[in-house]
Structures are given as structure tokens and as C-alpha cells.
Image 1 (cartoon, rainbow, N blue to C red):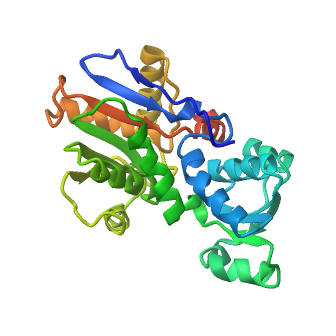
Image 2 (cartoon, rainbow, N blue to C red):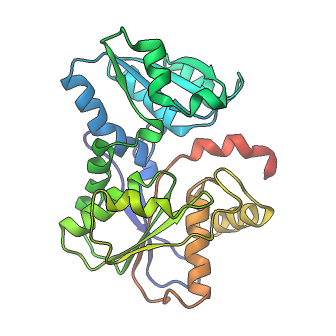
Length: 289
């Protein structure tokens, strides 16, 4: 399941950039999408090495991570359960989870804050279960995301990625340092007060040289948007043919365009943006387009 992936690097033709490229991790799989595939690769390997048969994880009602975990579990012959944050709802994402066989446990927001306690409450006596943190955050996930740099055939002046927990960014930075590259890693936190992400990244790569966080592109917070962002998505996609999701990749590409307009990026700089997939999340905001 985790071999022979398709994730090309494509050049984007969009003014005024001369060398803007995108790493198409969104093409890896329609359900185990983008960085979710990267994160789950070694998580599943570790779970299976421990002879675990039941994956237990956490997420919101529109979580791409839940869909990815459900799909990966079903393809691997494993059971899956998710603690879903908030009141019981039905939507397109949770429908997919259920079709892949995932058991959904809706959980009030206060209880959801203590994930290990929730896990122990339900599964303390079950030795078959394997705990996967929200979004797949783990050392195994960092190792998987570091392989993005291994995949690259060329070098770049700048690499951009969006960040929620910082796991993908930590993997990218680990890969950059592993290969001794001078590439600058630009991280776009998609939530307010995202400076903590730098600390998460530096847990895995203590040298902060060439690590840059841009904290002003969250558009109000995690999964928050504005009409300006939706207008950007429509314009960008119509010009490039590249679909973006409002939670992560739209904020990243908006940042790239804005930083160039502010002359922080040069139009001739060689820039690579990581498309982390997650396009199913568009359905959670379909009424805003």
C-alpha cells in the first residue's frame, strides 16, 4: 500500500513567478491524501510490528486524518475507531469513515482535550489497540515526512508548507538538514498563536538556521476563513488548474503570493510549495464558495 507512489513536481505558470513549483503529494491517493499518507506509513508499520489490530485516533468532524486512517486500516485488514470532537453530526467525511469501517465515538470538547485519558477509558483492557494522536503527530510521522526531501531531484531556494501541529514541517526540516541543503523552509501556521510550532520542529532538528515561520496568514484561526481567502482560491485555481483546500494549502499559497508582492521573495527564486492534499475538506465549506 505504501509503495510506488505518484507525487510529481510540477511547475506552476502564474504571474509574476518564473520558478514556482509544487510537489503534488495530493495525487498520492484520493483518501490517504498527501501528508496523511506520509505520516501513516511508519505508524502502520510500527502498529503491525507490535501485532496491533485496531487503530484508535482522534479528530474533528471534517478531519482528513480520520478518513485517511479509516482507509489505511481497511486496506491493511485492521479495525479502526475515532474519537470525534463535538456533537454528533453526519457529513461527507464521516460517511467515508463509516464506509471504510471506522467506529465513531462522538466526544464533548472538554473530554476531548485529554486524549490519553479517553483512550484509557475505553481501551485500557484491550491489548489489540494502537493509539494514534490527532493528525498522526509522532516520531514515525516525522520520519515519513522527511522522505519528501529524499524524493526531490532538484534543489530549491525556498520550500513552503502549511502547518497545524508542525509534524510535516519537522519532517521537511529534518530532511533538509539530513541532505545538508541551504534551502530555507518557510512554515505557514494555519492557526492563531502558531509560534509554538517552531518548538515542535526543533524537537527533531535543533539547528534553527534557515527555518522561517510566517505567523500572519491564519485568516482568523484553525479552519477559519475570510471572503478574501475564498476569492483567492477561486482566482488561483482558475489560473493554475490546481485545487486548494481552505484550511491549509490556500493559506500557504496566499502567503507565497503576498510575500512576493512585499519583495520578500524574488520572482526568480526557485520555490517549491508542498501540496499536502486534504481536498475533501472543501466539502465542509461548500456553502462559502
